[in-house]
Length: 307
Image (cartoon, rainbow, N blue to C red; front, side, top):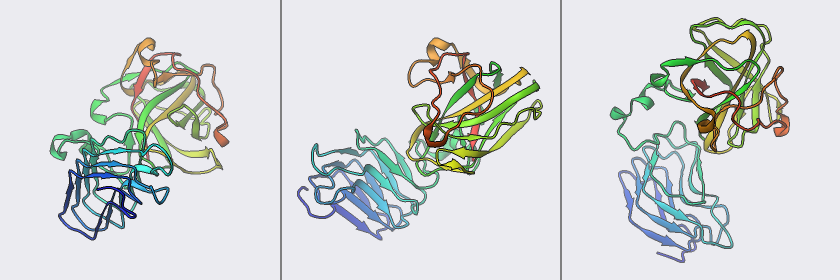
């Protein structure tokens, strides 16, 4: 199908419908639009050139409280000139129980605002990491993999990779200590960074507050790119970083999955130690702070999470 003035395929309040193996090109609005309904499957479709007549449309659009969506194996491409898609796949926050994986979006991007989509191709019964993730929590690594601990270097900011969806509201950041408590801390704080290491949120400095052994510390946000704030809403789906900085006579060890050498951890996009000689938290308003290059201290895969 090609050259329509509206959506290539529109499915309104459909139930138990499969939209599969279609070739849709040069479309007026969306390639495929699912509005409401339950248990709709969208698989193995090719969409190129959505938004010919209306800029800001989507290759595949799902909205209006659609429930039980399954979206996989689709390929979506830009037309190459003129109006372009807002995103290859766009799913609104009213959609629930979304399973989405294996889609080839090229450079069209993803805008999935649904809550807790399942993005693994495995059945839930065989995907224990997802089953064991507490509700409302995004983790740097599964608790099932956090079987060791590592000790950060005093005064060094460490960044740990974490996947976050667009529209996630981050209010707190947490890390857990191992068997060694912090001794005589002078500064410690947590940060949230985007994929380019730009700090988008931070907690307050905990200064000399104790951090005992075998203790999770959950700190509320105190500042974001917008200024003083208690939460930050992510603007894209994908790689982010959680940061932790502890300055103390003895730094507590932190629960982790392990660590790798600098020369491995510093390969882009990278993780691990960045800026040394840190004390008070940076100002993050307006994206004023970007963490330095990776390579200071080891590449520690710490266990941390956001809520």
